[in-house]
Structure formats: structure tokens, C-alpha cells
Image: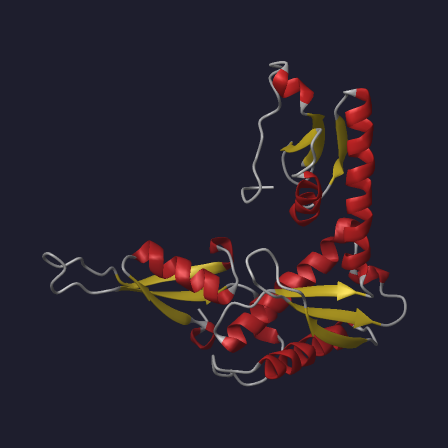
Length: 251
């Protein structure tokens, strides 16, 4: 275990302590080794209760190999976070052999009032950074979240983009969703879209969630999970629809 890359978190029980740690680091349970330091106790009628303490050690060897600036405090300003993230991503791109610049900006607030730090890579011949079905771009984004969240000791939503690809892709998916919805409403027949990652399926679901004539469901297993657009008329007629997953659950 690399003790320098380990972080300690507390909670009322072990599960809560782990959850707090994963949120702070921006990682999933599969990405860390968990060491229970103290299981904690409830005490008697709340008296003498002690918190649970766990140590989380990220498994990513890439995080350990990349030289990053010194850890900064939680009170770090937005501008300092931008500079830190920009420096880290530029370093990674250099290791990968790309000559590219990185522009940073904060996105508009989402429905929960949260903003994301967008790192847009600019340069020539950057298609390899996107990859098939955006898999390479997603991996790079995951790596950036892990590193920056470790450095800042807090969770930040970081979006990595290449020449505004994500923005263009989102607009394209919205247009596709509306076009296919019109077809389903006109013909009464469901349409199954191509397999997409969860982030892109979410765009389809959100684009059509208020549509008066259709609804959407996700079917299949990863990585071949797809969005199906179905007519709402079948619900009125009592046709058993494919199992639905509402917005906010697994996509």
C-alpha cells in the first residue's frame, strides 16, 4: 500500500465513512483498497459513541506516477483549481505525446445548481483522445477527476472535452431524440437507438422526458445498453412496456 496516497475518513458507521471518502475522492469502491481503522460504536443512548474511521488507498498506478503539484487546502479558489487542473492535464497530454493547449471554464449550473469545471483540449489531430464511443475521452476524464480530487481533498465535477466535442455531440443527440420521437409519435412503433454510454443515454432521456407522445427506457446490458423510444399510447392501451428506469436511476 502506498501510505502517501491514502486518505482517512470518518462516519457514524463504516459504510458512511467509506461513502464520504469515495465522494471526496471522486472514486468508486472498485477503485480503492479499504482499511477499517475503527469500527466505531453507538454507545449507550448515544453517550460515549465513537465514529468509525477508514483509510482509502486509490489503486490507480497512473495517479501515483504522474508528478502533480503539492496538495492544496479545501479553501482553494476557483481560479487556483482551474490552474491546477490545467497543469495536470497538460502534463498528461505531454506524457501521451500530444502537443495541445487546455482552456478552462465553468459550465452553467445544472438542475441541482451545480457547476462543472470544463477542460477543453485544443489542437490538431486529437481524434485519438476521443476514441470509439468516447471511451478514451471518458477514461481521461475519470483520471483527471481522481487526481484533482486527491489534490484538493474535495469532490469536483470535472469534464474533459476535445475541441468542444461533447457540446457538439450533445446537440446532435438532442436533435436525434426529437427526430426519432416524431417518427414514433407518427407511426406508433418504438425505435431502438444505437448503444451509448450512460452519459449519452441520459441526454436522450432528459430531452424527451416532457414529450407528450413518447417515453424512453434503457434496455440491455453494458456496454450494449440502448435507449428505446416508445409511444405513450401503448400505456393507455395496457400494452406491457419494457421495464422503465426513471431519471436519476441507473442509465
